[in-house]
Length: 94
Image 1 (cartoon, rainbow, N blue to C red):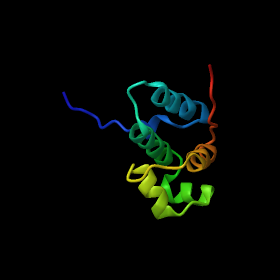
Image 2 (image 1 turned 90 degrees about the vertical axis):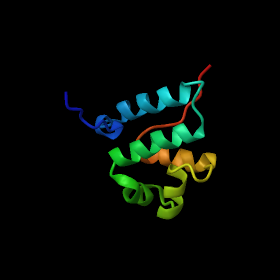
Image 3 (image 1 turned 60 degrees about the vertical axis):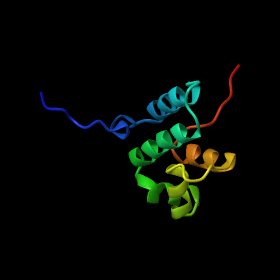
Image 4 (image 1 turned 180 degrees about the horizontal axis):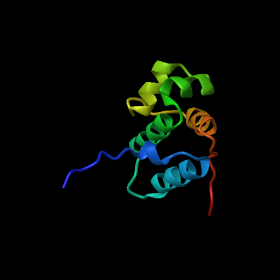
């Protein structure tokens, strides 16, 4: 039986889907910042790519690429800018 490549970004068409996806990653006790960066990279792909995300966030494209490839650990304000540019907000809940 042939297989079909799966891309998470194919399913991230609405802010609600993006928020649900990021919450699953963020809430997983086994995930780390690299997993979150992979998820944000998938969201970036779904919302126009790194260049478009760079334009919407005002962040340098090459720096943003390094963050999304988990080559550097982002500051919280960087994650906040990325989330907002993708139509979602960071929230905390008890």
